Image 1 (cartoon, rainbow, N blue to C red):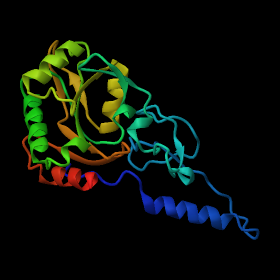
Image 2 (cartoon, rainbow, N blue to C red; image 1 turned 90 degrees about the vertical axis):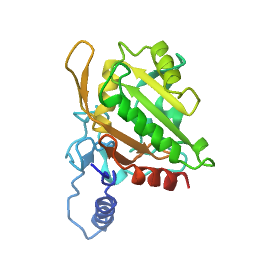
Image 3 (cartoon, rainbow, N blue to C red; image 1 turned 45 degrees about the vertical axis):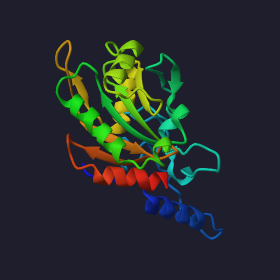
Length: 237
């Protein structure tokens, strides 16, 4: 995947709003069919006729005609709506919304990995190195462990130091198995334990804007990250 499609289908939203207004005229006898959708678009643009919960991330389905954001509110498409709690490499408990305000560059790994993960770490380092110095303080680079049992805060701290990523702009997170699975579904990252120490997993780096909305994804190992860096700089500006 070189670039993900826009999370919110603006055309569809406008179409629904226009039809809603048209149906409210006194001469109209049309029945409005409400449509609901996962705010994280876990199933793409799939809609439902009834309210409920997303079968993937378990968040409440949102009424499309009400999918607008008021000033100061968190967008319904933002990861900052997720109630999950995480522990960072400093053994501090945080929620994702604590990262609000920065552009986030995020990847899911596990520290004992000897194959793909070291290359993903190198890719993250390569991306960070290309961000202009005057913009670095507006970007946070986040690693989320898919092996929370092994990746304790102490281990994450050691890993950060081993990879010279122990500044405050590098954040390492671990959560419960349930929260990790939920978040991986949001990022479209698949992972599976294949041995006591090893996982197979997707290799995806995700970029979120300052409001926590998914803006771009880079898939693969050692790929040209020019477009990823360009998107980060665009968002910072």
